[in-house]
Image (tube, rainbow, N blue to C red; front, side, top):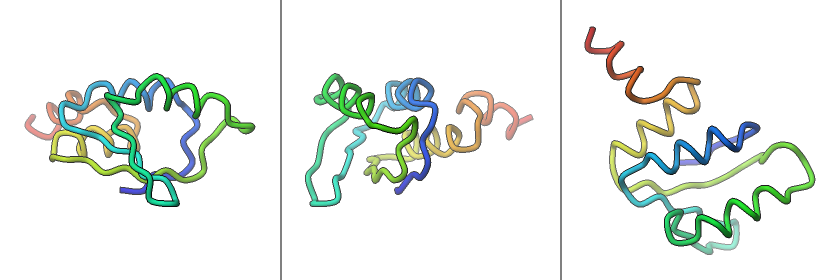
Length: 88
């Protein structure tokens, strides 16, 4: 999954923290960083970017829960709210 134009890092990091599955950052040169293992490094790295946004970020997500949480983040809703609206 490739995400473009991340501007709200706090909400993005909170979403990643809620994912129960493994979330892996993939760099352009093919390097892979597991979110849970490298969380502090990735937060620090993304926080030091010269701009207030990250233009492109590739993520690998192991299951549907993580993917749905990231999609809901992109849509501006939290997963639990989006799921409860769908079932109502």
